[in-house]
Image (cartoon, rainbow, N blue to C red; front, side, top):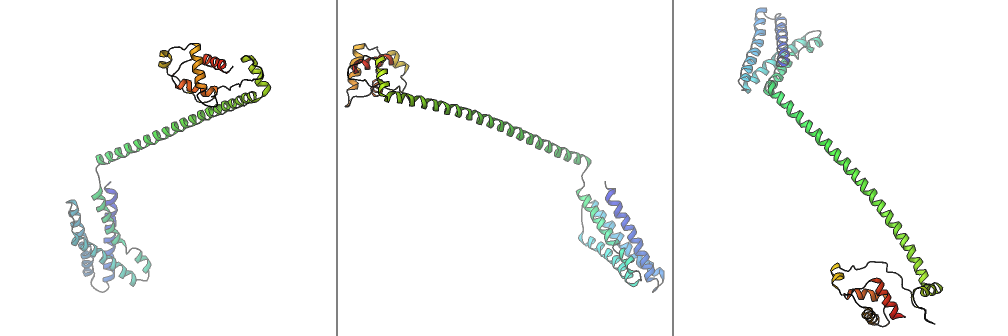
Length: 286
């Protein structure tokens, strides 16, 4: 992995140094002896190499020197300036300007290589990081799958509950409708004169000129009697039951209806079956 960054930097440095030396010798060789021009070119390249070597030594020690870096960039700028100045004096300036950036590019590649060295990790560390990332991805995938499954289960449960609730509501509506029709039929039968007489004739003795009132069955909330009261309360005789029924019935004016009398009879703590209580009522009303 190290060669991927250092080899391009070394190659770019060598090319830029050869190019700088050649340009200095060709350009300044016309104005001074070529040995002098060669010394100038080697001086520029030598200063660049010296600062680069020192920078690499400091980097190997984990250190850094701003003045040395500034001097190195100065030599790179000088080499670039020489190439630009030479290009401007040539007829084919575009071709020379196209390669004038090589010294700066070489310094930039060495900068990238230094950044890579400061952030490079060993193979063991990279394997550990990959393992941690893979474990995190696995946990995230499992969590997403769990959430999807829980959401699907909850959706199914809510659908089932909603459908069951709809069926219960439908049955309750049908039952309430049937009870309403039955109650309406009973009410019509109760209020009809001929029907009332017919029902009275089969339920009790007919008194001339009197049609006893036929009570509708109770439809509504009732108060249950505790088992303890049913078991411990003594059974009333027919005479005592008749007296209680007559007493409760005439406790107010006008006389109470059967339902009101039965409710007060139960709330007073008395115990009697519905058949005996209704029979006592009929005996007192007759």
